[in-house]
Image (cartoon, rainbow, N blue to C red):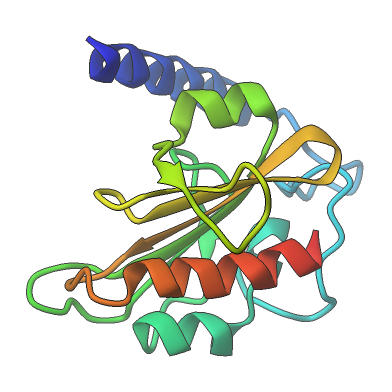
Length: 169
């Protein structure tokens, strides 16, 4: 039942987002359109995706986790940015996801796992989905999801990238 509720919320959020995009919401006065994180400051010139959230991790930081990748793209399901490996490994398209979400959106998409010690108070890690979430700037929640062919080292990678993300928001 919980899974059905989450899927329904994701479907509603996705539909609303598709409607906003289709209607031209978020377009800049010069005709360009960018989807970013309000109030977020990212390192200048880093990342190559279409979203400001793709600037929270550098190409090199992501490559260290999954190897060569697409440079990052806006992710409308998880929120934020997704970097996908250039080639599949053992039939899995490895990827790194990074997001900074308002609490309500976080509660609807996050796989909230077990508490993580040695990091931010309130940080949780879900082993099944490779998601690490923690409270960050002004009541928002930061998240890193690591999708790899092998679960070995997944939590350590999520923690390493979360610490980087924490320092940039």
